[in-house]
Length: 452
Image (cartoon, rainbow, N blue to C red; front, side, top):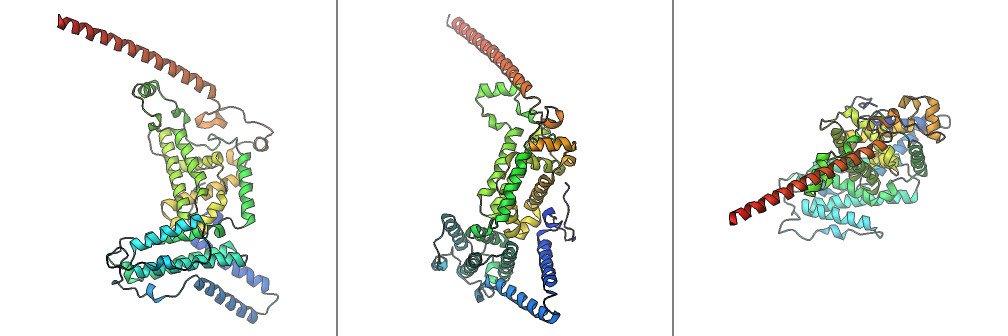
């Protein structure tokens, strides 16, 4: 389950779902594979000359599709630093809101439109801001139209969207108005806003558009349900749920000073929060927000591991087994479709490198491990694995299936331990109360002596 770099040696993370390639190399591989398949399929029907002509036409048509996502405008390549900034006193009312609408927008799309136009209006000069909005809105309209009138392959549509990102990014880099010192937003921030707008506006057309993908998600959820018996012990995690129990000293402090127990960082609390973040991925439309949920989930996992190790930092090798455990416990909805959506329509920089890229690659590895999980993966007899998965047998309560956390094996002892701690704490409180009464009595006696 170790992470591997791209098999092409480009330096980015490889993904098992992409045959060990990064997203960029995977798209190039798909293009080449499609060309090879087209050639093989048509080789017996067409002679070479006719095939070459048809392939050139197909290439030209694809190029036109790429270009159709962009509207040519001189303002993106010849912007002037003298363009009025929307935030300046001399700026004219922005024409962003005047762009024509062809359909009624949903509430999410209206909110995305308001956020995007507000960002452009406040952050960029008027001319490039208007042009960026027009280019992006035009791309969204073309995406929606293609899905409405034809059965578009999602990988092809991903190529169109990624080409749009790259082309618009190149235009912005060569726009002098956007490189002016008075522009305080970075190129990456602008592209992040563009990505969010495209993802939210066209979400219903881009996410889980295939019935096959939906069926694959339902199949994975059934698979995870059948693995409900897999605990942290089978996955060899280093989680220690015994840290969840308060010591008598901690409990006494909580009772005396009315301190909220949530201030004490506990392993199970952090894992519950991590599971919530993983499930919350499906509630967002933006690829960036989905990835931020994954990043927060991963950081909570590392916090849980750190607490399990009495404050010692956890290693990267300990992270992946716990991520698998979180997926098994949470069984997040449509997780495969969310992973595909991110890989297809997120900015390449998000999934190919950096913190989010590392966690995203781990998530892909974890999903593949769950899909391929067998008796050998868990180091147990095949007959037992099949019996537990089918539900014909229940795993015995022992150190192996409870693992380091001893959740089931220690359930009764945990109750006894908790009652013992409560009894000891109550005894300590009674002792403190008696001491307090004794001090009050001494104070009263001392005051009486002074008055005499």
